[in-house]
Image (cartoon, rainbow, N blue to C red; front, side, top):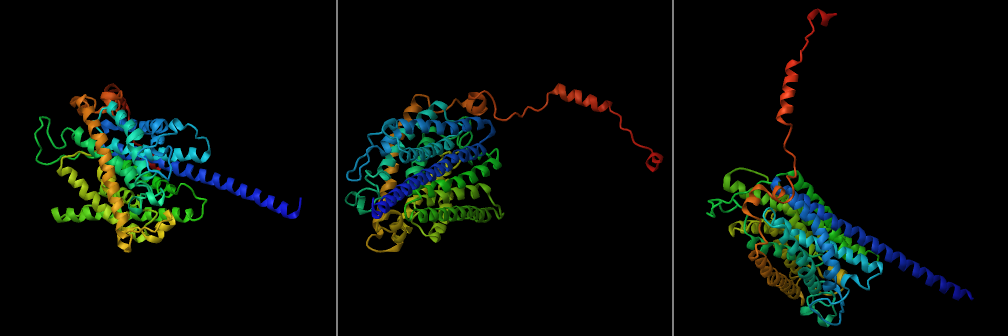
Length: 488
C-alpha cells in the first residue's frame, strides 16, 4: 500500500472516529438535558404541594408521579408516532402514522430523541394537574392525562416541530407557511400553551373550589376567598427546581451540541433564559407592590408574585430563546410579569379557579412568548438557529410581518385544536359524574377521602402520655445548693 493510500485510510478512520465521538456526545447532551427537564416534575410537585392546602398534598403528589408514568406510556405507545412518525419535509401531513411503540427505532440518536420529547410531553400534562387540584377526581385525571399526552399534544408537536407539519419551520421552503414557518424553539406554544389551554377549559367546566367564589349554598360571595398556601418553603423550592430545569428545557432544544454553531445557540439560550426569569420576577413583584401601595397606602412585597413572575419570564422566553438578543429577553421578561398579573386578575373576575395560577403562567405567557418571538427575533440569530432569513417585526425589512403572522396563526391553531378536542371531552367526563369529587370529600380533603389518610401526622402525643409526663415532672425534686456549698 502506497503512502497516499495509507494516509487516505488513516483520514477515513479518523473521520469515522470523530463522527462516532460526536454522535456519542450528542446522545449524552440530550440525556443530560432530558434528565433536567424530567427533574422539573419534582419542581412542579413541590410548587403544587406548597400552593394548596395541607389536606390535599398526597393527592397532588401522586398525580405528579403519575404524570411521568402516564406520559411515558402514552408517548411510547402512540404519542411519539403521532408527533414524528413518518415525517417527510417534502410533504405536509396532519398527524404522524408510523413508529408506534417505537417499532423500528433502535439507534441511540433516535432513542434519546424519544426520551427528550417524552419529558416535554409529561410537562404539558403536569400543568393541568395543578390548576384543577383539590377537587378533580382521580379517574378524570388519568383520563385527560392520557388523552393529552397520547393525542392532543402530539398533533400540536407534529404541526409545529415535525418536518411534515403545516406550521413547521423545518419543512422544505416551498411548504413553509407564509414562507416562514413558526418559530417556537422550546415550546412556549407547543408545550406551555397546550397545557395551559387544557387547564383553562378544565377549570371552567370543573368549576371553582367550594368557598372560593360561592358559599356552600351556591350564593356568590361579596369578595373571592383566597386559600393560603400551606408551605411557602415548598413553593420556593419548586420554583428554583423549575428554573434550574429550564436550562435543560431551552438550551437542550438544540437537540445536539457537536455540529458547528450549536454550542453558540445553546449558550445564548442559557443567557436569555436567565435574564427573562430575573426580569419577570422583579417585574411582577414590583408592579404588584406599586398597585398595592396605590390601593391601600401600604408597601408589601408578595413572594408569590416573585415566584410566578420568574416562571412567567421563563415561559415567555421559551419560544424565542435562540433568536432574541439578551436585551430583548430582558424586555420580554418584564412584560411577562405584567401578563401574569393581568391574566391572574382576569381569571378572578371571570370566577375561574386556578389553584396554583398555572393558566396565567403557562397559557398567558405561552401566548406572549410566541408573539414576542414575532416581534423581537433577530435576523442574524434566526439565521444561526434556523438557517432562514426571517426576523421579527421590530427589525423591519421585507419579512418583518410574516413571522408575527405565523406566530398568531400558531396561537389560534393551538387554542382551536385543544378546544375542539378537550372541551367536549371534559364535558363528557362531567356529564358522566367522573370529573369532580363529592362535596363532602372535597371538604374533608382528598388525602383522607381518597388516599388512606393525611400527608402530615399532626396528632402529637396521646393524652395518656402527656398525663404520665406531668405526673413524672411533678414528682421531681429540684435541689438548690446552699450558699456555703457554692463557696466551698
